[in-house]
Length: 398
Ligand SMILES: Cc1cc2nc3c(=O)[nH]c(=O)nc-3n(C[C@H](O)[C@H](O)[C@H](O)COP(=O)(O)O)c2cc1C
Image (cartoon, rainbow, N blue to C red; front, side, top):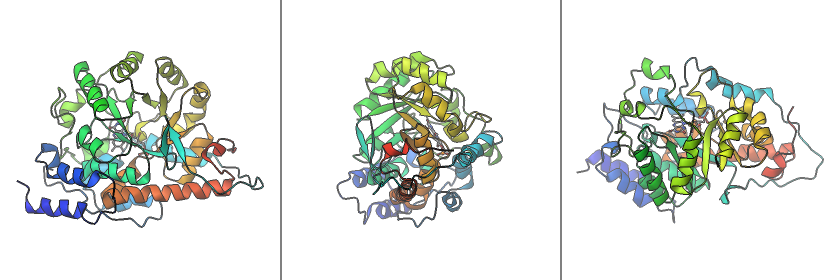
């Protein structure tokens, strides 16, 4: 039985949507209507419910806006970093140490943001990286993000620890998705997740290698944060569905054999996410990685590790264009995207701002976030003298 409040929310989420042609609406209502444990918050937790376009000035202030919608415990979990949060802040600070030297007499223009990875066309080189538990931010959870990513013409990474299960997210939109695997101690369950992802139509596997333990996120302790929902993928598997069960379920050692395992089980491109050292990039490529994701998990894992922007040039040198480089951690502005691409990235992931957009406006909020950062990137390209994404790679930073 769906209660009345829930019925109203579903109606408001699905009514008047402009997403003709995207399968999301019916899937969303089915997912939300389903009497599954993960769809029900415990402890009186209540996430965003509105679906609307957002008027945004920038993707810095959106964090403060989201803090008024997402309950304190959930907001601390999403916004926080590990330990002193030095790496979290350094991810932003590092971009300020490099400047773009504009070229103004090259006759370039108008700007074209189009990009691609593994032959998948993208509206711009900005994608959604895997992020756990979108239900903390908005009742539509990953279904809302999937619809927003589809509307934005981009790829969505779907986490092992998503709120909805991977099949529900796959069905929420027709746009391409990648499944992110946290390798589990239970190899059979890891295999099952990979096979389910392949069967559900995921186009690549993102293998996260920086999480053999969960980082020391002190905000969660300070807020006495108890996860108010379950993880859709884990309720039937050996890992169980709660955060406590999860922490002891992750594999505690990771080596190149895990990359080979993910390739063998799926035959899909495997992106190795969480690389900060050129030698790890080399090892991953030797093991068959189809792409490298330079990431420090948005400062949530090893506090005191460098900003990803600091290490990107040395990793780009080691990769030497053998495979694409995806970059994330700290991207908030179009000029950050530009600087990352000028330093060797092919595509970038935009993390927390997408979740904030989701909390404030559901799928339309996600779309609004992409519209804003794409607009900023186009402006930076115009002023710096880059007509295409490829051109950015030839603009000097100082
Ligand atoms: C709340 C939250 C949950 C995350 N969950 C995952 C996850 O399940 N798997 C993963 O590989 N990365 C996860 N990440 C890391 C993101 O994929 C990405 O690396 C990070 O958000 C980028 O940094 P940014 O938020 O500063 O843009 C998570 C990040 C946040 C903020």
